Length: 231
Image (cartoon, rainbow, N blue to C red; front, side):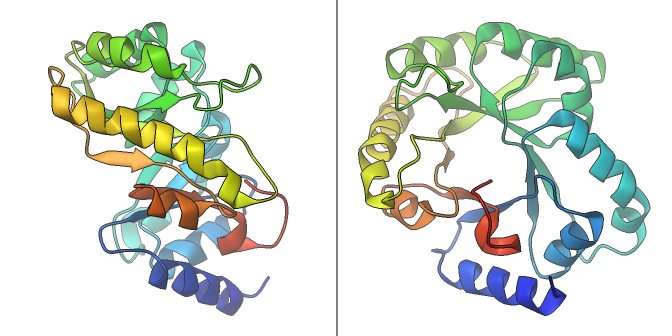
């Protein structure tokens, strides 16, 4: 893949986004050269599904980030976090988008406390109630937000959902709307220490619908990097 093609893809996607929408480049399986090229083309947030893969990439880009990167980059965890990976995740990421249990949140909070860090997080909603997907069911979101918001080294900044995958992206709208409804309800309730600032929804095939339904973070891989199965 030529860098010019990547630059063009990024430019096209960025121009299609409303102001104040954060584009997270989902970089699963991408090479360090591709990630560097994406950052050089204006990407300011990189997302990884797996802690181990992010660790390898952060190490590969460590010197480049320090000396040559054109701007500071945020690193987001956009995949499920296992409890035994919490320590490393806290060290690697600037935001964890996939908190889905008090147990996981407590593990993150404890590690953050030991290094004097406050971790921005999103609560992941299993909007489709899919048994094979992570995330908390919609009727458990508000209670979980109340519990996690009390942890001193975590800052809830919003919600995230994957939503079921369909061939027709229009079919994702009900799931995005459900998550937006929860987002708005939480914003009104103003749970202690929780701030509904970000709504992360939509991927390469559905980000336009997600934005129309209220998303201000989109996680896009295929449309930026290459034409293959959705990240």
